[in-house]
Amino acid sequence: MTPKDKPIFVTRPLLPSKADYYKMVDRIWENHWITNEGPLLQEFTSSLKSFLSCDNLSLLVNGHLALETAIKGCKLTGEVITTPFTFASTAHAISLSGLKPVFADIENTNLTMDPDAIETLITDRTSAIIPVHVYGHPCNVDRITEIAEKHGLKVIYDAAHSFACRYRGKSLASYGDISMISFHATKLFNSIEGGALVYKEPALEQVFNELKNFGISNEVTINEIAGNAKMNEFQAAMGLLNLRLMDAVVAERRSITMRYREKLADITGISCFYPEQDKQLIYNYAYMPIRIKRTFGVSRDELYEKLKDFNIFSRRYFYPLLTDANCYKKECGNLGLTVAKQAAEEILCLPIYSGLSLDDVDYVCEAITEIRKAG
Ligand code: T4K
Image (cartoon, rainbow, N blue to C red; front, side):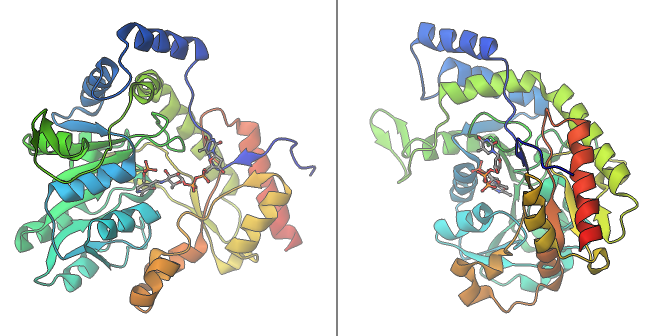
């Protein structure tokens, strides 16, 4: 097999037509308003509310600052229980808010937090749980709600990967007290950078408005010490246009996923995830994680490296496990977390994005087969 001349990355940003974006830019020039709650941001907010069928939604400059803002808005204290099998942002948002992340193990089936593990970690210092719907796989929302209610804890879902997922007839982002969705360039839906908070309590809107704007409530009142996390009009323009493409994007990603599953089905040592086997889930096909077992004959890391020879750039989301990262391992390196550790060593995310052709998917699968034969 000769390597492709163009690299195939794990993802590629969704872009609307340039002509449509230029028209939006014309509107920005006409409005002469480029940030600070402008008209496009207002329009984007209401379009998202109707897309997600939710009443309360605030937009912020990126997903990470949205998560920090959610944490500050809930006035959390002490310890927050979260997962180690996630992007650095989840635990960093807790630490940067002056709180202690406490890491719970995950479930093997869908790689989200294990409710039994959460319960064992609750102390009188625990104020919240921040679970992650990793790859858009829904957490065990029933058990997490039950545990949170029993112990009087807040639940903030890191729903960074969950845009357009619907669960039991409503947006997956509508579970918990608050959910954060990321609109980063690498996500299935982007506003260049961006993040949204979806929440139950309407009064949080004013809290978030202040927290994303230096704690200012009006020209003469500064209630909080806070930074700047406002989304600008160019981001809102991108979001508005990409939102129109969503149904087609999810359908395209679904057919890419189906092709991968079909082509990888007979390869010993590789398994795929089938989250939509849960009939209550309408999945977004945000990522294409596969699991490489020892029977594959080549390690996950070798496969990751050798794919590069074919100009294929997969990613080990999420490796290292956060408890093994330099910044956390001194305190958290010996917690066991055996399920999460194994996942971090076995999962590889294959390329998936709008515009990835089925021929390219076949090429990736053929490369995997060839690497296995050679290994
Ligand atoms: N919580 C969770 C669970 C998250 O996964 C994330 C973000 C957050 C919170 C925080 O949300 P944000 O603050 O980001 O909104 C990427 C993203 O930067 C990050 O947003 C995402 N999770 C994470 C899972 O993936 P990297 O380090 O893999 O990005 P990077 O730059 O290596 O991009 C991956 C590939 O995408 C590149 O190899 C090529 C391609 N690419 C990327 C960009 C930016 C393009 O083709 N064009 C582009 O413009 O983190």
